[in-house]
Amino acid sequence: MTFTQGIGDKLRALLNEMTSSTGIITQAEDTLNTKISDYEDQIADEEERITNKQDQLYEKFNEMEAKLSELKSQGDQIEAFFSDDSSDD
Image 1 (cartoon, rainbow, N blue to C red):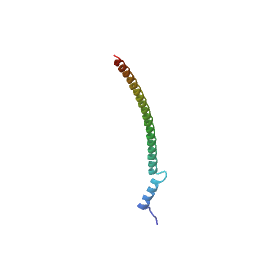
Image 2: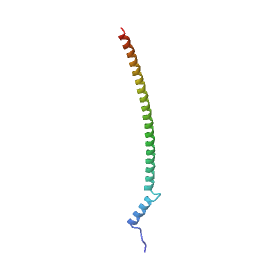
Image 3: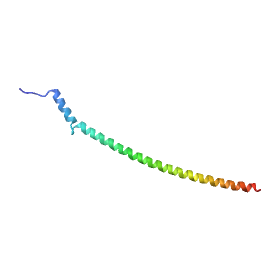
């Protein structure tokens, strides 16, 4: 008497092969996990680059505001000087 594998046995063998540690599904999952990890690294790098650029822009803005305040103060002094000068007339 000979036994042949039925469709259930063949399907189970195929699924076991596909889901084993060297199977196609595991390999595809590993590939996707690697890509996800790479994307996460790229995102972290871009976030750091953006944060650095943001810090630079804040610093430049603060420097600009300080210069603007200085110029305003000088303008006020010049205005006061000419205002005092014209009241002497």
